[in-house]
Amino acid sequence: MRRAWIVFGVVLLAGVAARAQSSPPVDQAEQVRVLLERIQQLERRVTELEARQTPQAGAISAANEPSPQLRAQQAAQAAAATGPGQAPHQHDVQEQQTATVQQMETHFPSLQIRGFGDVDFSATDQKGTTSGFNLGQLDLHLASALSHKVSYFGEITFNAQPTGYTVEVERNIIRYDYNDYFKLSFGRYHTPIGYWNTAFHHGAWLQTTISRPEMVRFGGTFIPVHFVGFLAEGNIPSGGAGLSYNVGVGNGRGSIISRPGDAGDNNDNRAWVANIYSRPQRFYGLQLGASVYRDKITLAGGDLREWITAAHLVWTKETPEFLAEFANVNHRAVLTNLSTNSQAFYVQLAYRLPWFERSVKPYYRFEYTHTPLSEKVFTNQDLIGSILGARYDISSYAAFKAEYRYTKHQIAEPYVNGVFFQTAFTF
Image (tube, rainbow, N blue to C red; front, side):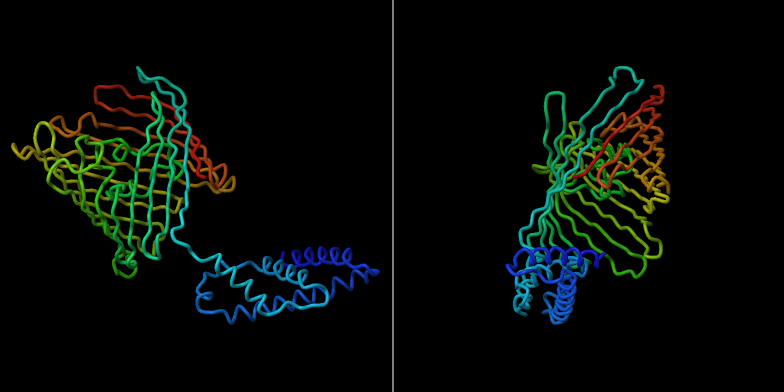
């Protein structure tokens, strides 16, 4: 490939030189040979200059260095600019290399925007529902480095509603990276309870399935999906165990249970969350962890103490992909001391097939949620159901998904059959 680029550049230069000369052109083969020798000399000179680069330039990752083909093109352009009888000055080559290094340096702030979107279709046999298309979410991720240790991240979604669109600030975070063991951030997060809620965010393209499990559904109430406050995170020196942690303090659930206290807590009590997990170096893709969450909830009927415990085990190699989470939500009334426990779990298995350029990924998920009749914070959470589907990656940035769901929300209600389709993409 490198030889092909060199020959192409040489032939092009030979043609330009031939047209530029007023005297009869010399033999074309001789021109090619002479120019080829000059390009090889320039390449050797560039190599010597790279060896004498300053420590700052040497720190640039090798992955960001110009390819041999690009260096050959740059050398050919330099040869053309100096004319057939001149060699480029050494300081010219150095200036060119310095300009390349400066282009690769990070400038602050440096805003990057990435987007996600999806279009959905659903049809079920549940009474009172209609089938049809849904635009889904338009999700924008905004990231900007403010210095070598300070960065900003934001996530904004546009959601289609029957009367128009709503705009939500899903995440709004500024983070200080002291080192790999301690990173401190402030803002609005996805609460680090379990695995799914922090591994897969609002872009549907990120996750294998069309929908999230019911226990971590956006707009759901089983666990607080969002959290406003500060969060400390980092690695724990643990050798091959690969331990990491998250510890946060902030506003708990708001007056609307499905939302956090964005504009302030509704009682004089801070919520806190802690999460510890392990990614063993010996088993790539394996993660197991546990989480705890503590808060005080103020409702019209009185105050309740909330205690959430969760555990997860995942294997994300895609051949296979295995995800499993369990959470228990305990609510205890402050006045009556009445206590209730609600449980939810899901198990998801997927496998990326070796055929069709590994673009097809079938999957199955079983999920279960139970809330007792005496539960006061949220009701009608019961669910038992199965999802069978497949994901087809039509490119590296877009996918088709199809699902069949067989679910029941109440014991007395019949099972509901439904088919769901989605095209999800990132840009």
